[in-house]
Image (cartoon, rainbow, N blue to C red; front, side, top):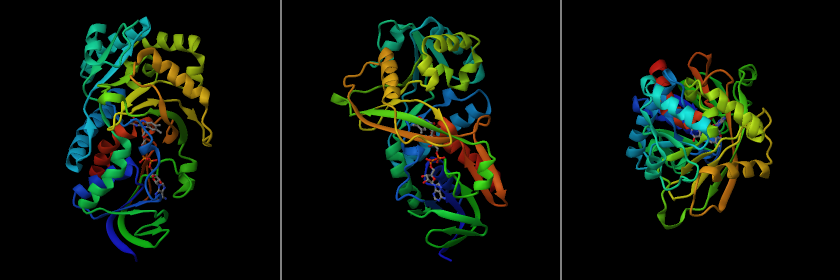
Length: 375
Ligand SMILES: Cc1cc2nc3c(=O)[nH]c(=O)nc-3n(C[C@H](O)[C@H](O)[C@H](O)COP(=O)(O)OP(=O)(O)OC[C@H]3O[C@@H](n4cnc5c(N)ncnc54)[C@H](O)[C@@H]3O)c2cc1C
């Protein structure tokens, strides 16, 4: 045997890291295996938005709020940056303003501390919003931004300080408890937590084949750091986003917005585009995204999809420097009906993946839940 631990975590993305933290915090000896020399899956490719306001009311929203609190605790202890800036959803069309007003009315009773803001109030909160045509928006203080590349690179170091043993460049090939077989050897463990993202082929392929999980490809862009330490302030979303996040299904007015977008902006439905805006620790602006659902990910990115994203961003965002410095795509796994996918293929083995576009938001909350369930 190469070693022995209480718990093996498979995957060095945010779900793997948060689960390793939750187990180590509870006194377990943890070993984490990441097949890459560094994790380069969905968790370093995202906006870093910890976004409770996007979660549907009830259990998922509560998990997201708890997760945000845990993020703060962990990043403070790890001395990694985060930006508790809150969020703004802005409306330029009357139907967008209607949904946002309705959400501001109904949201607080459903547990979302948020408020409608008139254009002057919005512009007070953010220099990044275009004033022309602005009808108002929704302010919420519960959202924060983390820097995904800094977090995914920095958390392993912090976990190591907590006693977690981390093996990069070591894929797990087989689990048959108590043995974990990796590319380099074999470990003896009591439990295994599999957070393998959208890898459906390596571990438990038969289970994943019938799981209903699908892949989603998203195109993303980033500007260079903005000049003169320009600050975005609250992370931003606009009208198209209201179609995406289940929280807004509270609003009866949503249907007419969706119908108008389908009528007037068909390519935005075809590529399932909405526009989110966040800022990194070094001041760059992250912009995206599109959604292509398919088991086979097209490795070639589409310039026309990036153009649609940028065109939409320009309707509400003003930046000192729009030059795009980086383009990439990310892939996540998602279940068509469930907010996340979990399974126990054999006693002591727990699979958690399929968190879709909310993995950063939910990670620490879900990890706490797993720990409470299995320990
Ligand atoms: C473009 C984009 C933008 C997004 N924006 C946001 C956002 O702003 N806010 C938000 O909440 N969510 C966002 N998401 C979703 C979020 O990024 C994902 O839900 C989350 O990162 C999934 O984390 P994960 O750990 O499950 O997967 P991953 O980050 O993909 O990690 C899985 C890891 O497992 C490793 N692995 C797999 N199999 C093995 C094996 N057998 N042995 C060893 N290692 C293995 C892989 O190498 C990989 O590093 C976004 C996603 C994308 C793609």
